[in-house]
Structures are given as C-alpha cells and as structure tokens.
Length: 307
Length: 248
Figure 1: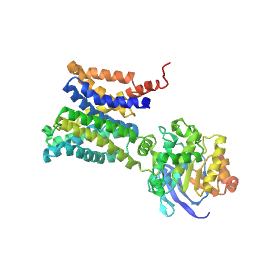
Figure 2: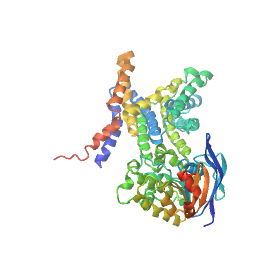
Figure 3: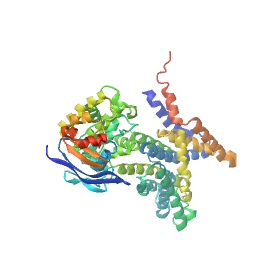
Figure 4: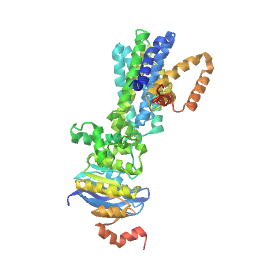
C-alpha cells in the first residue's frame, strides 16, 4: 500500500512544500506562474492523449478566461471570488462553442484551427479597439498576498490533475479514450462522438480559462499578451518533457521548464539559445518523458527487499 | 419467419466512376441468417456501410421496422438495434477487453433499456465476454486489446455488438482470418444468436461455413445482385459459377 501511494504522496507534498523552501518572493511568483502553465499543459495532455484532439488553443483559453474575468472586474467591479468562477465556466462555454465546428476534423488540422483563434481574437481586439484595445485593462483586483496566491493555485492544480486522472478511468473517460483509439467503432456502438468530444473540449477549455482568469488577477492587468502564442506552444514542450498521457507529466514538465527559463535570464540575449539546447537535449535523451521514466525505475524496486 | 425486419430498396452508390452498389434490393426476415457472397470488389462491404450509415447512398432507401435508415448517422442506426462488426477488427487498443465493452454499455440504447439498473458495467462486460468465449477466470479479459490475436479480436467485435442488445447483427466477414478450429468454435455461437431471435446478415468468403448456417443467400457481382435463393439452389446456379470462375 505504501509502495503504491508513495509517488503520489511525495508529489503532492512536494508541490505543497516547495513554495516554503524557495529562496525569495520572486521564486514564489515563478512557482505560481509555473502552475498556470502546468494547468494549460494539463488540458493539452488530456485532449491529446485521452480524446485524440491535438488542441493548440492554450492562448485562446487564457485570453478568453482572462478577458472575461478582467471585464467583469473593471466594468462591474465584481470581486475575484466571483469573476474567476464565472470566467472559468463562461469562458469554457465560449471556447467550446468556437471549437465545435472544428470537431469533425482531427490531428494537425484541428491544431491549425485552434491555433488560429487566439491570433484572430488578438487582431479583432486590436482593430476594433474594444476591451481597452492595445492598452488592455489595468488596475484589476489582485490576490491579497503571495501566500493566498500560492495556496489557491497549487491546490487547484493538484485537484484538477488528480480529478482528471480519476475521470479518465471512469466509464465516461473510457468512452473518451475509445474515441481516441477508434472513433468509427464508437459510432457503431450507438454513441454520438461529437457530443462526447464537445464535453471533453469543455472540460479542457474550462481548465484553460481558469488558468487565464487567475493570470489576469496575478498581474492585475489583462492585455493582448494573454493571447500570446507562448500559452499554446509551452504546453506541448511541457508535455513532451514530462511525458504525455500521464497527466502528472505535464505538471512536472511545466514545473521544470518555466523556472528553467527564468534561471537562464542570466544569459541575457542568449537565453533562448540555451533554453532550446536544453529542450532538445531532454527530447533526445529522455524521449519518453520524465514521468514514464521514473515510473519504470520505480517499478523495478517492486520486489526489492533487504536480505 | 416471414416478418420483414429490413428492406433495402434500389440502393445505388458510386465512388467516382465506379458503381460500387448498383440498384440492389432485398428483404431481410426476422430471425433468419441471410448470407451475402460475391467475388472481391463486388460491393458487399459497401452495402453493409450503406445499411449502417457509414456511407451515404446516392439514391434508394433502407427501411427497418417502418423507419427510414438512409440519412441517419451510424450511432443512431446502432441505437435502433442494427449493429455491425467490422471486416478489419476495430478494437480500442489501449483498453482492456472488459473496458472495450464498457463503451457500448455506456450507450444511450443500453442506458434506456436497462432503465439505469445496469449495475457495474465491468461485471456486465465480463458476463458478455464469457458468453463469447473469453475465459472468465483467466487473465484474458483484463489484457489490453492490442495484445489479442485475430481470433480474439473478431470475437471482441461480436461481443461489442452483443453488448448493445441488438435486434439484428450485420457480420462483415467474421470468419476471415480465423483458423479452422476458431471458425468451428464460432459457428455454434452464431447459431445460438439466431435461436435467441436475433436476425443475422453475414457477408462471407467462407462459403462452406456460410452455406451450413444461412437460410438464404444473396450473390453479388460488380455491384449488382445476381442471385437470391436458398443455399442448395445457389450452389447449383450457373450464373453464380460464372461470376466466381469467370467462365463465359
């Protein structure tokens, strides 16, 4: 029993204790931002490896979630405790509505369309000069202090991760995984695959919009940079580094890559060069990702007893 | 025996210039085994796809119990109890055999008919798998579908159909790729299904086994129906020999 629980417990405790041991407030801030990226990576991994939809809509989700939350806060003066849940649910619904027409297409084609939406929204806001135009909406409510910030986002990340891990092994999750394996056979089983894919996209975009809404209140500002392509591309890198199809992997990947990117700031303009080299190295030497690698190593200790 | 459960009327389907199914009509009676044979490329699988909604017909209608099937989505047709197996098995590779059956058990048809009193889907799945020849006490039902041989995959296909509590099963070459002993094990299963009142439509290349099972046989060639009769008469038919052997 202890053997089965140890990895999960150490992961959860590690996540909860890490903010206490990092040296400065800057690093605590980086920790929360990593968790935002981790949530996006989680939603990417869920769609890619359990539903078979390659969705590069991370930036779309953060943008929509962030703007809804920002607008509610600046225009109506609603507090964070209302704006974040509303932005999460409403944002998820809006993103899903926009993605529904693309559901019959798969693979790289879906990826292209989902990548197009953030760019589209970015340009529309810029061109029509709505929602603050290029200046964005400043002066939003922020979290009272760094501890509230940390101990709201980290537990949420953990809850969503293990919630999804449970979901994919429930009967509903089994249907989603079946759609990934063979959608025609699922159709022949009297199951409307579009409906199930819609539900899955809603779950993923809700997680993404939650991340976006939190991000808006972390910065106290929403702007066009919420639609930045980083939010779409980073989750792929995090999933590859952490190990796809594990759900914990992308979290770990994000928690490695985001701080790494910060550490490399010392290199100034060469930062991206070193970042790319490290990323390439990880992909070449640990292709399967960290979590499957650690899992394999851990299972080798299964029958390991002291003599 | 003479109640018509499915009617195919003047169905036409072309792929580009090729007429895959050319004005085919036939009736299917309740609880019979109807065989469909024909040389390669004669349009048998296309006919199955047309009946189950995977391919849209250019013209013509398929009617089941007074309901028009043409134009319905595949999942809707399956919901009416007309289910099919695939010629090339389509299992869910990353799931175990039991979880493969959880998918049809999660369908609205089963939820509707069981009235929410299905119980644990895994248990129901295990019962169905045992019925179809997966050893309950062995490790087999828990193995991933990717580890199964062709024989097990074909049986899994059939199990997926059975899980949907069908009125009619359309078997697209369920015997192909199986060893003689596997086929011998499969024949009583098909007979048992017929006895339980399920109508069966079999597309087959294994003529000997099919003729042993079928009540009636339809022969297709170049998209057209060239004969429809009881197996004995089909065997004697000159026109069928010509289609198969190319004798002029």
